[in-house]
Length: 127
Length: 433
Ligand SMILES: [Zn+2]
Image (cartoon, rainbow over all chains, first blue to last red; front, side, top):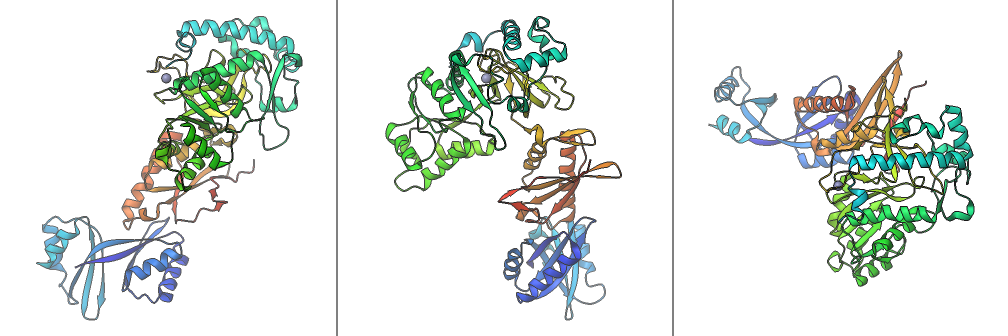
């Protein structure tokens, strides 16, 4: 499944991150998953939320650099070894992954995958 | 077309001969008639007889804007007041203005320069020109006016202001050329599009002649598009004469300087040593024919370079590059001359950059630090860390190759760089020296 992910550029990491969570809370947006990628200079916060557009509007109103990226979301059972077959397919098919992260919802695991050919990646893991 | 092919296309040897003859004369004339310059040459141990050709110009002392202020209003005049037929004054924002005095010959040579420019832009006596520079103390209005009259254009001395009347006359007279500052042209263009009863297709405009303030290639494209014209730069300054010291030709690849009348040099603003063609430094002018207020090696504080390659248009006169800024703006970082405008032009090469930036120079443990904060366009903040880091590396590398210094680059959030009155402040020099 292809879903939308928010990416937010944050400079002063700790304070700004708190602000993001406050703004989303006030806007009534629920964060389902997040991950932070950072270097010594800045961080890129990636979020999956329940209402992407509302989150974008609230963050833009507060002058955040927020953009929407399409990502592949892989849904599988939250059991040992359940992810491995999918990864094997992607590496066998030569799909290069820019980044990925995982989160669990109830008894399901979800893997978010960013690659330059989303359609193909999505097709491969759906089969 | 070329207004004065004999001068504009003279061989470099012929030009050298003419410049030499004229420099010898102007130095002697100025030495004999301007007390302060006489004293300054004496102090440098240079006599008029030491100057035998244009190649000797480096022996002569410089003149600065401060000199013209110090000898306000007319002590730098070389001609008696009975021969002065016109004054103009600079619009300096601080202190006393600079007063320029012109003899009849000066006005004639000035309009010769303007006529060369207008002809290079394709104008002739078949054109109707609207001059919307201010008329008065400012050299723009009257300077362009007399040059256009010399060419034989039908001149509409509109001056500035009263936009709807400007547009009405432009439409009803079928004006073919507009001459004003680029910012006023932009204002007129916007008014043309927004004022009821007017539209660009009613106009007969072909050429725009813009000068007296710096403008960018983006602005040129915008003006050409909005007014349906080809837009040309006209260069000049009151201290040297006024508009028409030089102008672009049809190839728009630099501004030809009429160096048979206005001799340009480029110097290193710190050491005052002459620089070669192609090198960026401070532009210096010597008026080879001025009688009223001649200037010798006048430091303009404009930063640019000269190009002596033969132009495709056939003119042999040197071409001046874009004005990169002012010496006042120049920063010396770790001994390297850095012009904020060079940094800006590199930044604008990257489509990801919004154009908002802040250069911060500091000195820590006797070492200059050079930090550049940069905002991106809001949609260019990538979700991909390595893409962001690569962009950063590319900009740092490109800057280093252009200015010769490695900067500490920080990509910051949009809106992070302080804007003052809508215009960003681009340089913070925190060094306490
Ligand atoms: Zn040319």
